[in-house]
Image (cartoon, rainbow over all chains, first blue to last red; front, top):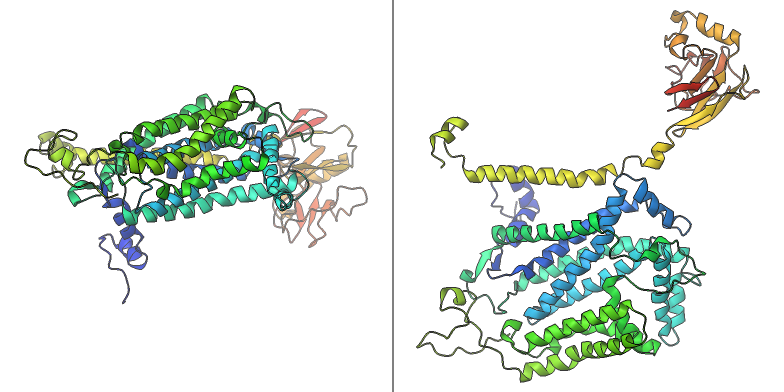
Length: 424
Length: 187
């Protein structure tokens, strides 16, 4: 019996399983008693919401796949059959379609939390990079998923984006032919997109497991951006954050339900109700809203290769963010200049999104160039400089101190020496 | 609260049933209902879809079928034999003594009242599932004028009842009705 795990559970069935495979002990440790900073705000809900969203997408996707036909002759009609004939098919489809939008809403807010509170800084660099990998996988999955209904926008969006790769010198066209499996987006392309669209979510699950494992080694960040100093700074994950997450889930489901039941096609493109026609291009080729900022960056410069490189660079720059930001202070709460400039960055991102929805002419070209410039300026110039030039506010001694000591933000008690700056 | 007389007498055991227990019970029940409500659409989506159900009923026009002839139609993926019996075949079926049958069943129970010249049966042998011969003019019909299964030699009479094994049961009867004298609806 050597090597068996010593289980603490009293229930005999649970104990029998746990001694042989300590999943109950693990769940108790990682999600039961796990010491979590007690000062989380609602921004910290969004990782859990993303996980729930992923489960919803996989569940609806699997049941949709029971009726979807990945063949150019049948695909569009199979989606209509799901909507009209399959029991609750309309619900499965609308949940899956709007779930993709919800996934990006939740993820963008989750990323914003990371940017604002410095969650990408040491020792969480790898955690952050795993997150960027998840974002890339989500984008690939969403792009391929959108092709599957084989509407006009499915087909032409696929054509535009796969054609991008031809920008690379010499090997570009060979890559495109390889992606297509033919000489244009056609049945081989649709079939392989379906296969990969089914596969990638499970790859995402794997990377999410690594993401959470990495998190649990270093522990969560918190709105103050300072390390946990003692157990007094923490609360067990259950019941405090299980309950808080439950509240967040209710709000998330309310927004989700409003979309699904009252405006299921609000975020979609009407062109996708027209079956794909390789001989007729729609007046405007526009990706789904969550890709619009990157689409704007792509079209901001007249050179095709440069546009492609800038678009990829806009995501790749996120990988090196932990090293671009030189500030020793994590949380924007104590960085008076950064906390204003980050909103300018958000504004630039939104402006890029609006530009992406419009034709690249007139004012939109100017705006997208300015916003693209600012986007890269933020990461490559402002963040490195700001760390050196900005004078951060004094950090509290600990997470508990603003509550148990003097009022947070007020003058330190008389007689207390100035505390040294918190090392990030 | 936990020690109030109401709690003791209402529950009949020790007064340690707390508000927390009630809340946990309600939360658990709510969660169970929620899980069921979410699971049901997924499971129901696997039930036959509306287009499959629409094909679950077919109409058959009987006018081209002369006496002595039979046709085969497909209903829910199965072959259905629709045979127009001659008066002699009908009489043979009606007059068969029940004790001579492997599965006793009166002919009147296998036809519609007033339409005893029509026999509608599922064309699947009740032995191991082959499709018996007998509908086409050149097909062997066995010794009883009905159908003959070439796989293992089962023979059916003009009412679709098994007369020679190894089949254990009469040919199945699909649900059908006469919508007019020359048209039936199966399913």
